[in-house]
Image (cartoon, rainbow, N blue to C red; front, side):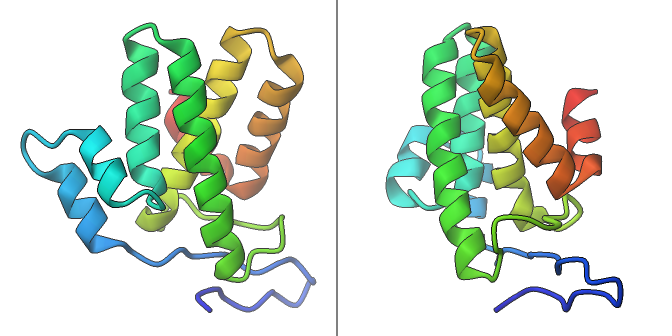
Length: 140
């Protein structure tokens, strides 16, 4: 399990996802096709975030929504395997967490675009609850 202990105030511990270097390096390679990387590493939220961002930038909101939702759920699975109980800090500063946090942001962005306001608000709150720095980093 890769999380720190809660503090004396009873706050939940941080959850730190493990690095997936093979997936991260495959995605970062020159000319990498994120769809091919996703097929090789389907549990890696970072690749789903990349697909969601590219689809959104291309005006493909529904595809962005679907990619973000996939990465969000894959990330939830990984978070739970690493001690997350559905709440508590998921720090942006820990790079392996960024894929999931980007998926939460992308899901909220796509939801807002299609007027799914409850889902957008839920994603915004989850992102702020996970790490306010993440929300600020992606909305700037």
